[in-house]
Each structure stands twice: as structure tokens, then as C-alpha cells.
Length: 468
Image (cartoon, rainbow, N blue to C red):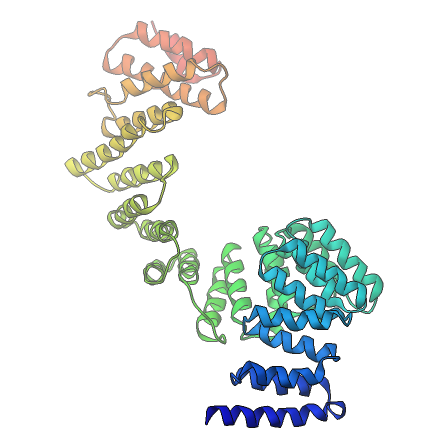
């Protein structure tokens, strides 16, 4: 029964094929495509296609149907037949097949032949430029310039921008897009134009392009998202939240990701709506992630949101989770965690206060074994924590760290402004320690001399040196 069905369908198509001269080529291609898509036996397809063996457009169209169905062998067969008739689009299909096989050189060669046989067809030029955009953006753009010479009716600036954007040459893409008539640009080029601005940190310009596009397509999810992100980065938080609402609730086919929710959290945090920001970050954590580092990044954002509410226990909890999950925590990350403990300690009293300061101090102590190149910074932070725990210096908690810091700074060949500022703090501490705690004016004066050497107008040094 199935064989009879296909025989009948084939005979029907043959009848149409015989009258092809009276039909346009598109109808003929559609007829053969129906056979292919209905999975007719190959011999039936070939029987029909044979009637068009001298029609390059139909042969290429059949090849394109097979290409779209990922049947590259049949696609190549029909494209090759058509290419023998010196038909430009046939070479484009052969180039597409080579590109699909990741043979860029062969693809470019076929596209060049397409241009030779059909110099007015823009497809050969744009395909060639697309293949060459990573190898040589300048050569790709030169090919688009050739198109401009052959077809002065085509606005090539947007095409140049498209190729340059695909090559990650964002600054050059912006220059090209800026020359094009924005009102005549394709949506995909407007999107690339806006993204090129966004990816180069030009958020205001990116926003302007997005808003221009949204004037025509207010329910476009991509442009609403971009306007939302740009306003967030520009700290226009009220406008950002407006566009967030448009993305989440008033856009067509919006596929939301963790990044949308985390950006929403950023906008809410900026607007001081910390409770809502926390909910947004937690919603982000429920989405799919393609790396543990990205999920860890949301943990860090969640910690910041809790910090904005002065909820240090939760801020510390999520920051510790961030450090645990991120593939490689930096010295800056550990410093941030230590500072959360310091800030938390400053809200506490008694033993809890001291215990929390000690947690911060332990982090800096442990960092010494991992980051030897910042020993002076670590000594400075531990000295400060010692002062917080022992403001009257009775336990000498800060003293060894200030002394260590002096050694480290003075061992440097050159000192910068930060080094000098820290030395001043060290010397002031030791002057106070020997003068007040030890009642040792002579030693205090020795440190005052050192202080005056690096800060001649320092009033503390002057006053101590005048003591009898």
C-alpha cells in the first residue's frame, strides 16, 4: 500500500514536472520538497528531479531542501549538478556545505566562484565575509566593499557592522553601524549595534539604540532586557525596574535566565529594596547555571544584599558559600570576608565582639601562607584589628604587627604614597605606646624623629620632641 501511495504521488509530481515550463521554479521546488519531506523513495524523487536536470535554480532549490534536512550527501549532489550550469547560488550552497564541515578555505573558494558567476548577488559576498571574519576582518570588509561597487543600491555600512560584530571587533563595528541609516537597519543589526555599545561599556549609547528599537517593537524581550541592564549599570534604578517589569511581564517569548534575576536583584539593591533584592537573588539561584563560578557569583551578590541590610550573619554565611563554591578565590575575596567579620564585630559587645574580630584576624593570618607578596598589607590589617580589640594597647595586640609592617616597608627599594601613609600610622602608634603605656619618653622621641623624617610638619612628632 505504501509503495502504491508513493508511485501515485511520484506520477502526480511527474505530471506537474512536465508542465514546469508553465510554472515558476519555486512551485517546482515545492513539489519535489513535498516528496522529500513525505519520505518518498529516493527513486521517486530522482524521477521527478530528472525533469529539471537543465534547470539550475530548481536543482539548487532541491539541494537546499536536503541541506535544511541535514542530508549533506544529496544536497552536495544536486548543488554539484547545478554548479556545472555555472549558476552562482549553486556555488553558495556548496560553500555552505563546506562551512558546515568547518572547511573555511574551501567555503571561501566556492563563495568566490558564486561571486564570479553572479556578481550582483549579495549572498556570495556576505557568506565570504562571514567565513573570513575571524581569519582576517580586514579582508572580510574588503569583500563587502566589492559588493558596494557592484551594488551601489545596497547600504553596506550595516553589513560591515554585522561582519565586524561577529568578529568581536566591537569598536570597529560601532563605527560602521553609526554610518548606516538606523531607520532602515534590520532588527538583527540594531541588536548587534546596541550590544557592541554594551560590550564596550558604552551603556548610555546602548540604551539609546535599545529604546529606538523598542519604539517600533515594545514587546521585544531582547531590547527590553538590554534597556533594563543598561539602566541598572547607569544607576537609573527606577527606570531599570520599569524595564524589568516589561521584560518579565510585557515581552513576547521572553526566556528568563539566572542572569535576568541577578540583574533584577542588582536594580532592587540599588533602589534600596533589599528584601526584594534578596528574593530575586534566591530566585536566580533556582535557575540553571552552566558553571559553578556563575552560581557562586550570585552567592556573592546575595551576601552584598544582606550586607546592605546590616544583616552580617547572613552576609557572612553567603560569602563563605561563595568562597567555597568559586573555583579560585582571590586575595581580595578573603579580604572582603575578613572585613565582613570586622563590620559585624563593630555591632557587637563583649566576648562576641572579640571573638568576631579574632575570626577576621585568623583569615589574614591564614592568607599569609597563600599570598606572601602582600605581607605588608596583611600586617597592616592585623595591626588595625589589634587596635580594635585593644584600643589602649594594654595587651600589645597591635604592636608586633606594626613593628613587622615597619620592617617590610623599610625593606622596599622604593616606597609609594600608601607606604608612607602606613609608616606614619605605625610611628604614631609606637609613639603613643611608649609614651602612654610604657612611660618611656626617650623611646617615644626616637620614634618621633623617624616620624618627622617622613612627615616634617607632623604635629605629633613636634609635640613629642619638645617634651622634657
